Amino acid sequence: LQMLTEMVKSFLGKQKKKFPHLYVNKDEEEIFNKSINTLYDLIKIDSISYLVVRDVLKWVLEDKFWHSQVTSLYTLRHKSPNGNIKFHNILTAYNKIGG
Image (cartoon, rainbow, N blue to C red):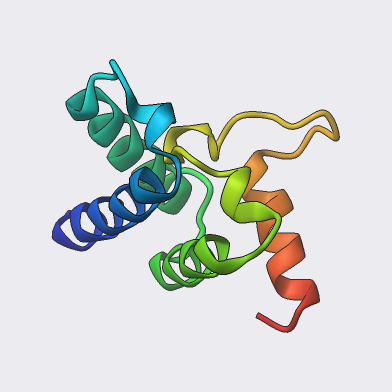
């Protein structure tokens, strides 16, 4: 849980600096808790390794498209129009570039 906490703090801190307007009047504790729960579910329910989640999220922060598409972590398990969860779409893009 400590590793997930650090991952979420880092990710949200970086995204908040890039997109501060998205965090105005938001309950940051709720965002943090939903983010932890989502990452936990990706690992435990969806069987995605912690290392893959970590590496993909690091890449997302630098990718010119995905950095603006993933401003909160709790949407990563939401279904996309193609039927996949958002994280799987991101993982596919990450793997295409040799990640």
